[in-house]
Amino acid sequence: MAKIVLARPRHSNPEGKRKGHVTIGIVAIQGDFAAHAAILQELGAETVEVRKVRDLEGCDGIVLPGGESTTQLQFLKEEGLFDAIRKFSRKGGAIFGTCAGAILLASEVRNPPQESLGLLDMTVLRNGYGRQLASDVFYGPSTLKQEPLEMVFIRGPIIEEVGEDVTVLARHEGKAALVEKGNILVATFHPELTDDTTVHEHFLQMAVKGTAKAAMAR
Ligand code: GLN
Image (cartoon, rainbow, N blue to C red; front, side, top):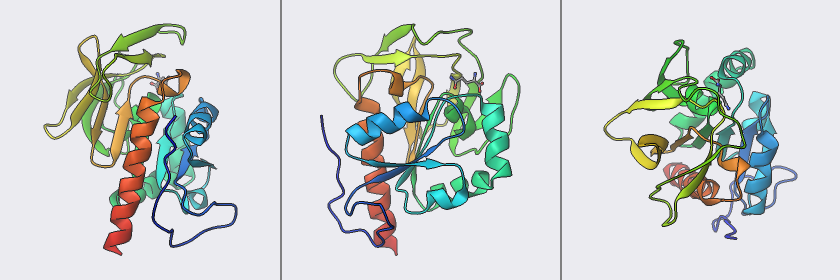
């Protein structure tokens, strides 16, 4: 398995953080944040559970896991993380949202309409696939690998529309299921619940690039 390590020295090295490693903050309110952490650690990243704004300090990327987007939105607002995450993105930090996290990142949410971070130009329909169980595994084409990508959906949103400059990296039943633009990556499925590390590897590459770019701009 590929280990992803930053080659450049970091500007700061807060306690407990190994030098030269990419650090990913995982919003840990609900959902399978521990599964994201396990995969990212396996790939060589440091992970931090994010519950407060200060937890974002020193992070190269942020994961917004699945769960219930309405509950998560409320928590992000109460904790000031809503604004802090938007600021992180403006500075070029990489953000990966899965399922509820995808809903939070969308520019428009339907069924019902809901406020969101609006960091990716796309319209999502909540619970668009109806009731799905974690045991339902699907396979869809992806530009990230030759073989089909394994996808687990749990009451996921449907991406109904994406902006012109949004890249579709994988599809499920013809619909975009993994998309990206710049520093934002979104999956309507749960790559943390499969053995396939392709999507997390891709995200770590994005986080490394984003941090390197930000460091150069300083
Ligand atoms: N249905 C949830 C929502 O609308 C998302 C489900 C998930 O994250 N697995 O927020």
